[in-house]
Length: 288
Length: 288
Image (cartoon, rainbow over all chains, first blue to last red; front, side, top):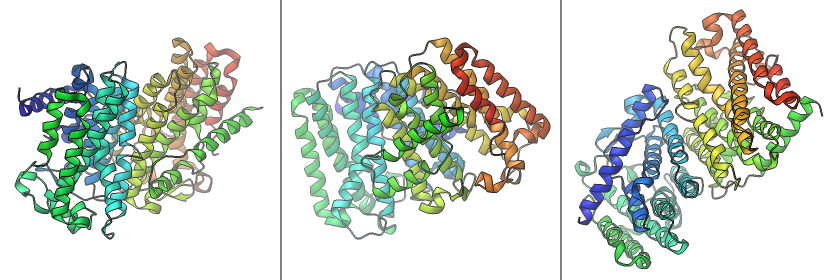
């Protein structure tokens, strides 16, 4: 399999798992609202990274599926809440109306809460011998020192003067945290030694930073038809973005630097890391 | 110590623990919004029940504090989201403006998300040998088959015809689930045998049902000054309540029946359960 086929194989496996999740005990309306955002054709980057990291560490990807699914649930919850009228007030995502547009605000808030809670539930129920340790990594990444720190700084600083230190903090929390957790959690599930988990952490961090800088650039210069969402909103809402601080050219260079650092971090894995290396390099050219 | 002093001792210990929680890594505004709702002078019933259940099972209440705190965080998050304009639109709680009135809707949504996430984080970081099992009980109670099922049915059925079967489902999820989890989790942390955990589960369920029926009655007949919140809102918003289905007299009787079933469930614990027995009986007379 080439890299693209491998990514598609991980994605198909994960989507199949997500689609079959019973979400036991949920009232029908809640299950429907959760599934609407969970199964909306995203890239599954976080989940696929976890499966790839687990196999890179010599682990069983099948047993890691609940953790890959949990990451996708946490990502989906964060997008539902982020899109709410009181937050970014987005009405379209990946070419479809956002959750609150379809189900109303009340159910959208609950569906977000439920996806976060269910993520923990399926990890707790996985029976994986490393479940507790891997879950700790994932929940810390989603927590007040990770994703929620980034979201808060993002929301609270709309309209603020461009400040690269602050943007770094926002991107680190909002994006890099949840792209780092799949690496560390996947390697932990595989029983990989500490130095390899830390190499994975460095890769995930730099990949995440590059990913968000490219996202900022695409919001400025992307093709709305390809992106499936409203573009130019960052500027309109006075969001702090990387290109707003350093300019488009330097932002592109910074994204490249982070990608090279991500690739360098993979050195301890040698040839086995070819897939993650290719995936990092492809980030620079996504949706373009 | 008499029962009231014992409850106060648990409460003081828990409040002290909550007040000193560092909430590491959180941006200042997020920490402030979280603490505003976490430290707002609630009864701490869920947390105190967990500490009492742990001691009833012969365990160490000190080591159980992160789990008692986690329950209070989950309760606080559910109230913040429940009070939002898109949900119950409440502006006062326990005599103070609600979270979104003080911090704005965006930060209130994030503070709720953060309290839920941080609850899991502190349980995962507790290092307690029974952490994973106890956490599973707590997160299931907060999940799509527990609290979130109740919240969804509650929100989705405003204005519906009174239906006692539906109200039972709502109360079971919305209130009883999070009053059952402290019993099962506390006993699990103590290493109590299965049949005692199940006795605790029955106690918590009946206590929770009685508690919510009394709550419905207080909303109809309580003293707003004593309750610290707007009363009569259930009726105004067309909420499904127990007295709306069966009348005030029968509702009072049903609450008594649940309390007697709660007390009966404590039989396997014998004399040691005096505190939980007294606490159940006091539920019938709260805030009156």
